[in-house]
Length: 119
Figure 1 (cartoon, rainbow, N blue to C red):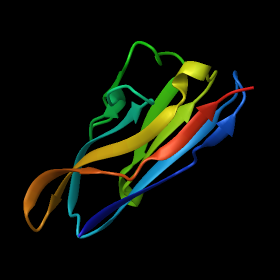
Figure 2: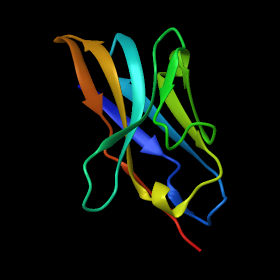
Figure 3: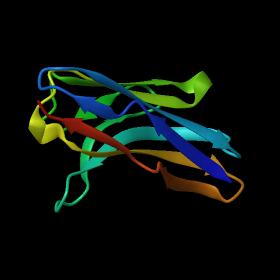
């Protein structure tokens, strides 16, 4: 069984920063691409950023220059550093990865962590 545990969400004022972490555990033998998505109330889940196992990154236009995705393969962890946060960044943030387990390759999702940007 593969489990993704996220942490680092919370309440922050506009202009502030947060760092999200997501660590995989369980029977996962290899990890491919990792990423972060978010879902605001009444909206569909959207891509925030992705990173390949080679370190190539991709960002949604709305977060370019403010968010940085990184990963530590030894720790099976992906991070999202969020700076200059805006109220429109308020959402539940989900981590995602492509993982290889006993059943082959499959996508896995975290449970989500709430990020609220408000004064």
